[in-house]
Image: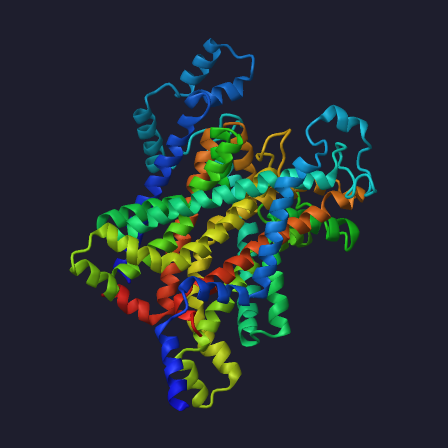
Length: 322
Length: 300
């Protein structure tokens, strides 16, 4: 198990290096090449002289390999992701400010998703092709088909303006513990984000449990006189959890992507909104830093999912240690 | 008499129903999929024909400025007008032309690139496979919408670029699935037998690996069309979609949703229903295609 984790960590480092090189290289293809931030910051009336001075001050005129080396050096040895061109902050500060907020949003949605989707999927599988199943499946299909922003806007319209009058925007400011002091105002954003992932995960859970229910050991358990409840919630659940853990690990980037739209609609200052604004104003270091950070999250999430899989499923542990 | 019956049964066995007809039968048995197909075809025809047969002003701001804005449905404008004075029903078809074209073309590119990449990785195996898969891991660990936003600010927002950006970045999940298939089939007995009889790698891919993974390819293709349409609408919402005077459903939904608080329901609800039904229909078709192409399920 330990050597397996080590090997997976090594692979993750290689993947992360690829991500860094890719995201570092991409800005070179902008309309003005690597000088695009200079044009964006200095505005439309900048002279070539100004642009040149600004670019050389920010080290943009160095050769590609020198810049890549400096970037990696700073990142690896100082955890320094550079400085924002637009805001008077280092990228590390921006990340430290906004990461907790987005993580609270995404994490609470993830936990709620698991709490809702897993029992729902099992329930649907046990009541296969009944009215309940059809209704749940139809709802899941519609939720899957509805664009994130439309769901958010409809939720604001229906639950914010027409009924219940829920607060439509989480509190301003960047205090990460706002979710505890004012949980009501997080109801809509977290709810929307949860509903979107519940659709996919419950559907997947239903399929997995259906596959498990026809296995031999389930029949054996039934033959031995296990109650249907125990067969479903003990035998099937444990065996169906494996694929779900993997899917949850893989869904982390999608969660951050969904969080971007949710943050945009609910005007919640988080990582996604920062990325969007930075990308639109060619604030390259911020985009780079956040992208790298999210891929670190993803890789760690996948690793955690695989380790959890080994804990849940002893068969994989034996394979892994071989 | 009994012998005659036996012979008949035997001759049925001898003369099997062609595979495509079996598949069609399974597909036709799924009523929801038929309804979905009809819906998509009618909507596509409407989107591509009606703006040309019965053109409404959708591009000229000056003319639109003289028509009443945010007008409720009437006999002149069946679904009312939007906040610029454009006819809403005509605009749904006008925008649909772009949304559907982009969705289908991007989905097509996605599946072609994904299939080729996955087949190569799965079939060649070894170091090539690991390198290709690590590259894929790197791509997959970047949130897709972040990447789309960055790419669009980098490469611009023309229609061709939008198709290419969504098409050439959407295939990663697909090629994972297809690579798994290729890896599996490569090690099955019939593929091994073919190789041992001296078949070239290209032949094995062409006549064994590809036909046997077609079920996944077709299913994944339909889902990627649905995903492409959804992502395009998200981009439209963020203001990164098709540029005016052209429009797409995402941009329209965003504009309409902003008017919802004023009670102008006709600017968002009809389009929202049409849009959601398109994605649901494509998913149903995908489900039915999976059943139809799953060889093990045939001749039930």
